[in-house]
Length: 322
Image (cartoon, rainbow, N blue to C red; front, side):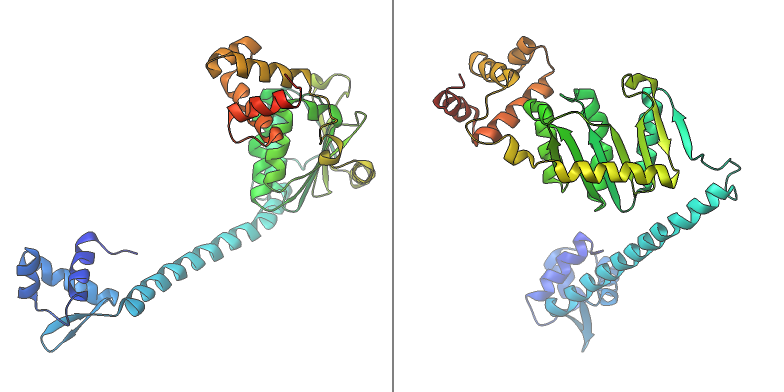
């Protein structure tokens, strides 16, 4: 609130009595006279004390402190207004950029080829940053590789923190991988909508229904990606996504309950968890990093509704999973 420790000390002292002089405060708190005088002037300016009859009296905290809170809130509201104004300027500045008024550059093509893994992720990061309404994505891979999840997490979470509508379609096979399923649950907890389909579908990501990203070659993802801005083509990708979304299922209805068989990797994780004394040992047995193993375990504990690893092992045995 902008009140120093010494100012607070004097204010609390004055709260205990009706009023005090500079000398009384100096003697009681063991402070130098000039310091007390300057501090009191500061407290008067803050509205926490007022002078009466040669002495100073504390202002009721319900009034004085509330006034400080209001000042802070006013400052925060002003900062929020500045942030909103800056965000509102993004569209206008983007138009200037595309026209080459701010930077001399050719306009973005309707169809752009992007090669190289890092270059593709950089372009996805850019498209995600400038999205302001909606993201649609289809990920046909199963399971997702750890590096893929780590690369996607900051982009996905940025969309969700900003309140964008984020819909994701995956294949059912992906749900059988503990790491992939744990990440999908993380996305759902943050506000994403996730559905699954039985058969692999076209990989794509569509931003604000105006830009789409698809593989340059669906059979060879390493060749790169195509960024599409042509309205007619983007509309086709949007239609494909919506049709797939309508026929997709909620993961909870597809892979829930006791009838679902335990995937082989889950069983290996459970066995390693029971057999090994330390996570590091279990991770080495499975040939994964410690962090990846701990994510596997967290997913299994959630699936078993277990509060501890011991309880998870007991429940797995009760279900015949071990």
